[in-house]
Amino acid sequence: MSDELVKRVNDLQRQVDNLIKPELGRWVTIVPSLYQNAAVAATVNYARAFVENKKATVILKMTATAAGTITNNIYALLPAIYTPASGASSSIPLGEGTYVDGGVFYTCGVFYLATVTSLPAFGLRVSTITDGNVIGTNPNIAVASGDVFSLDVTFEI
Image (tube, rainbow, N blue to C red):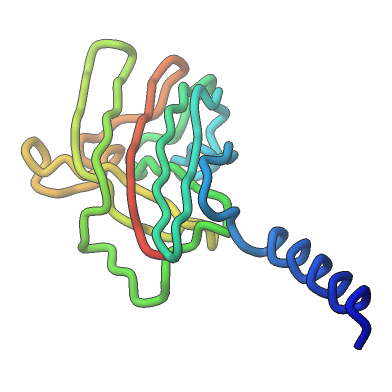
């Protein structure tokens, strides 16, 4: 192959890789969503991810602009390219976060992996108050406009 053809093939491969893999080595803006039995409209105040080798770190903050459905777990859903490596367990804490319910009920907890609608998802477990259940079910609350969901997680992809 000519050098020019090799260069062109390598350029095309990089373009394909960028479509199916997260960008490596720098912070990038991502588009997460809020979910409680269905998508819940939310303003993404901040959502960034950093991928280094096979380790992803995601930091985000979302403010709900609509209501969720009570008695259902509340999750932050990430883009599919941030799917954790196979074998990742829902029993391993991956980070911490907060849920502020109407500016009154402030909950801190540990985020665990879940899968919701085939997307990587993180649910906030608040074991000090609710014996390890994901917020939304126990304590039994519904997302409401103005509620704030924040997380910081690191996991293998």
